[in-house]
Image 1 (tube, rainbow, N blue to C red):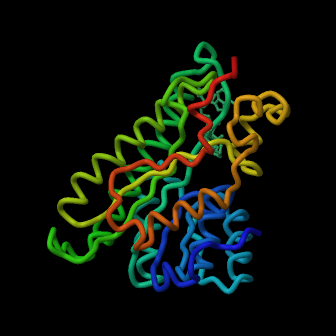
Image 2 (image 1 turned 90 degrees about the vertical axis):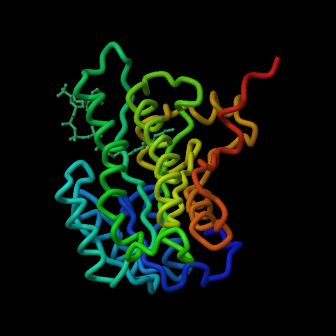
Length: 269
Ligand code: HXC
């Protein structure tokens, strides 16, 4: 485990709710926020995954709780947000890390398959933000208040160009980035809520990579990668901590690309 560049108390006393927080990048975010002082609520569909994630977090001495729910269901979103509030007494930070993905050509993708990923990534992100607003705005202090809550949306870089067999995810993450900017404008102005995104490149040891990356990623894709290696879940979690901490107090409406420069790269001539 890489040592943290941050002090162990940078999110001390904060309560963070992380969708998809039981596995992959979401779980690393849960872990790092916990290790830096936050109380962590994680939301996911699979009870077993949640239970094992929570017990791992407890073994690190982190205050953690898991709530079953599907971000596609508004009633689940409302219930989980309320349960988090009841359990910890407040919500300071919402991280939308739940996502769905599979590789399929546009020709073979059914409209329902397209809609499924839009529902999870885009509508799910909006639904969670919407449900959490009343807690994040902290009683509606208005534009002169010291600080509202924080939202971090996990995005991707797929839609900056175009990506083979990812039309559904590209469209969904483009919508996520729009949600990030529009909420940053509206809720940043009205409630001092900061809303930012993180766009990870290919991150090793994640459900996304095992689904999306062919086994030869190392040999083939490496030629295109400026850093010649995959990112680590840690890179994304530490970026999220930076945005959520006071270091990011003037950052609103941006999407931080954490991909080692990969999306810009092209073959050498
Ligand atoms: C084609 C597929 C498909 C596949 C599902 N569908 N899998 N089509 N190829 N492999 C279609 C189905 O045929 C159906 O359409 C529709 O999608 C809904 O399928 P369900 O099986 O009912 O969906 P559901 O059970 O809700 O599962 C959702 C899921 C699942 C997205 C399919 O994989 C999921 O929830 N995954 C979450 C975990 C995950 O993938 N995390 C990693 C995210 S990584 P029809 O028309 O038949 O009814 C990530 C990285 C992005 O996001 C950036 C990378 C760089």
